[in-house]
Image (cartoon, rainbow, N blue to C red; front, side, top):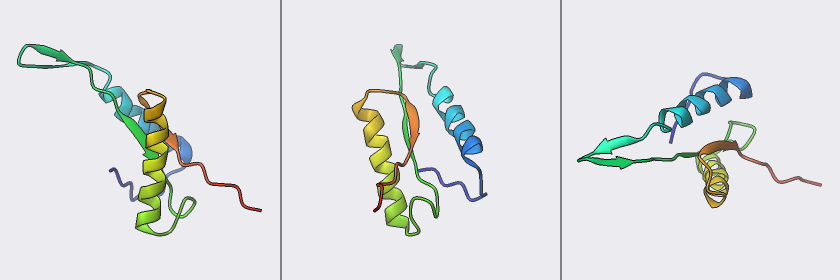
Length: 84
């Protein structure tokens, strides 16, 4: 989990997420083995996606799981359900 305390707009959050994704792009070498590591980041924003810690974590986790199902190394913001 990554918590950003300073209020940021979505563009700044995207930049942080992109920097994290790029940091994992290069393969790593362990005991003579080349390993490729991927990262899937789900992002939720207080108070847009929730005001309680568990709600924010669940929302970010759901977004991360969506990316993992698509086998992508990237990030996604939480999508709020539409209310009527």
